Image 1 (cartoon, rainbow, N blue to C red):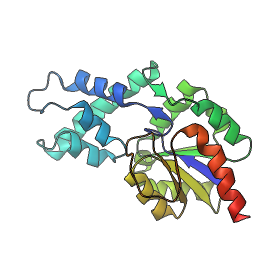
Image 2: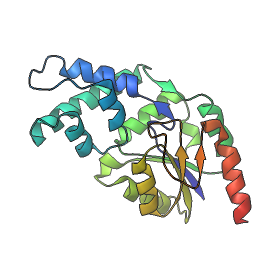
Image 3: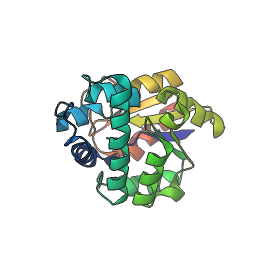
Length: 211
């Protein structure tokens, strides 16, 4: 059994950094409508193609994807510089869970994005694997399946904060745990946590019921 985590809205909050990157890149481009902080927030968890359209629906596909690549690169620069926020108790929770279970990360972003999280959080040693779906041109559900396969795991949990994460979990046939402190506050699920520090208790409870 492996516990797999989403990144944005689950392990860290990158809305401020992403919004700043968006302003830095788009402020001098005349044909882009102003991208609000709420647009950035509601874009968390979308795929690259979906986010490009979400940010810049008035632009043609090639142009908006070119600009979103620039925004993503600028975001990564800010994150590398420490412009992010880790959720309260996240590091302690990861260290605790890693003593009992293998841990992984699956994000819609690319592998480099996951690496930045691992480097800035100093948590690399606690995760067995990570997959950025964009680096493989696959869906998040396919990425979860890939992680199960390459870590020889028949079963897993996926901890995420959006409906897209729920859909990916269903696609991969893993148990979804909703991080209610993230982007989507209200999702009808069997399991949820109000804070990440509650995750070990919930996992233990579920595992006891299964045994």
